[in-house]
Length: 313
Image (cartoon, rainbow, N blue to C red):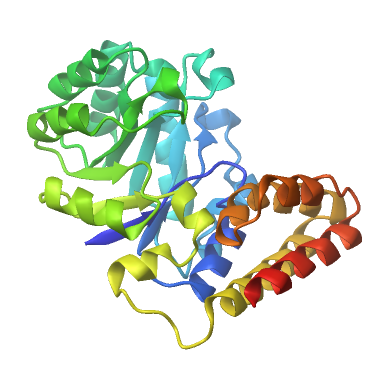
């Protein structure tokens, strides 16, 4: 069994990944936040620091691509393979964000099964890289996803990472496990399950219901509880108290952000994370709102430390 770190755009870049696995255990590999697929002459790999091999010596990663032009995706794979030596790539056709979908990217690709097949065929015929897809049940209906599975049945897909919601749901409502079971029974490709693994009980339920699946992706759930992967894998806790381990991680990651950017950008990044961290620290809506209203980095840091100290007791 393997546990994957999900690609959360704006969050799970190499500095976060490396710091995270230093403090928390159980994650085996990760898919990187997406990069835009481009023609080879427009792609500058030297700007893609998240993919530099020296930045990914701790945790195995698979670069993720976003795009809707088969040739661009193929050329990007060739360029990144030649430059960095990557042998695996993932194509995002599952992102449900409106600004992505409107451009016929991410989940906006799923109604166009011919385009999906054309892209997979282009990559399989013209590269030697292992190719996978991150998808949903469909944009508007599960029939879109099932049609894609049918068209890709004969292709040597590395795996399908499937999130059991429709794109139109965004992240609202429950995952559709009954519909997902149809996908599970339909495809012979390896499945990586992704979606709403927020606690050990739900993970155990998934393992019992879908015994052929051995790979599971953790996203929002592991940001809300950074100890989730190790609780799943070993069911035991490090001897150090969990709040102290969390604070050590938080302090180190804050310092890393400051060395890479500035106080304004660091503050923005930390505020984004506190939407998730608030769950671990059991903040009520008023406490979180008051924290997020602080717009000075020093004052924000002080307020965050006080909240963590108060709730660590």
